[in-house]
Amino acid sequence: MPKVSVVTTVYNGMAYFDRAIPGILAQRFTDFEFIIVDDGSQDDTVERLREVASRDSRIRIFTPGRLGFAAAVNYGIQQATGEYIARQDFDDTSYADRLQLQSQYLDAHPGVGVVGSYYVLVDDNRGERYVRMPPTDHAGIISAMARYIPFAHTMVMFRRQAWAQAGGYPEVPNLVDLRFWLELGKLGWRFANLPEVLGEHYVHASSFFHQSFRYVERQRDLAHVQARVVRELRLPGWMYVYSLGRHAYAYLPVGLKRALRRSIGGLKERDV
Image 1 (cartoon, rainbow, N blue to C red):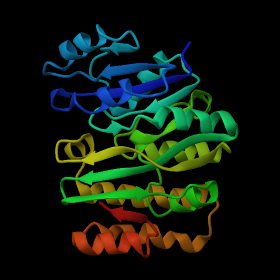
Image 2 (image 1 turned 120 degrees about the vertical axis):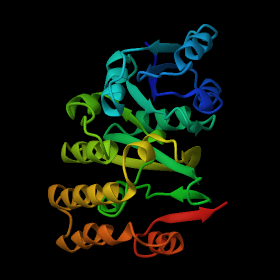
Image 3 (image 1 turned 90 degrees about the horizontal axis):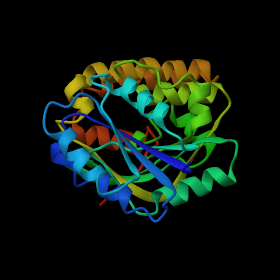
Image 4 (image 1 turned 90 degrees about the vertical axis):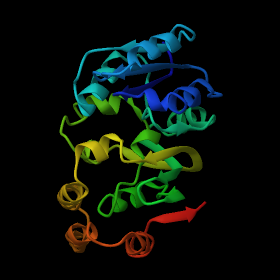
């Protein structure tokens, strides 16, 4: 059985075959399987996936039909045999050291349930490209959860055991990742981010998020979950101010949002 199972879902992914697959297959760490769940694609994605899988035995393709994002991720993890699960979005890229560094960290820190990293964020909608540097320590990550999402979901590795204890990903239409981190935090798992840039995360109009939710609605939902974080992880009551401010944030101009993220929000970012 492999040490790591990389789990990816894809829906109509023909435009992105040059991202996730080459990045994972080029990993220096080799003890992994690559599970790709086609979530009911209506283009030629499945045929192309089977072609790629025929050339590398580590790739396992599943076609359960249209499940929706969270259910498709849960389905992929159910097929996994690895001790650790590495999430990977089909339209993002992992650098060659990612699986090695994250698996070594989990090996050395048995109390940590999730480890992420620094990453390059490429926001095509806003015309921004910068390195995002979330907190690396558990206390900092827990505090950040009341202000923003302190992991790039596409860049995390977690223990399959932790996923099982949480009952899997919540099968809801929005903020699946933050809700999942909240459940793991309540179970007592610790969090970490490696201070290394281990990949690139793209935000674009054709992404799952932008196709599925209006931006303002997502901000309202984020405010609700952030309030849950403060309450259920027993953070200081004054931190409710961040969830309240989230309602106004959606309407601010891009430049002001960036300034607020990097000041009041406490996000460390470096333009590239």
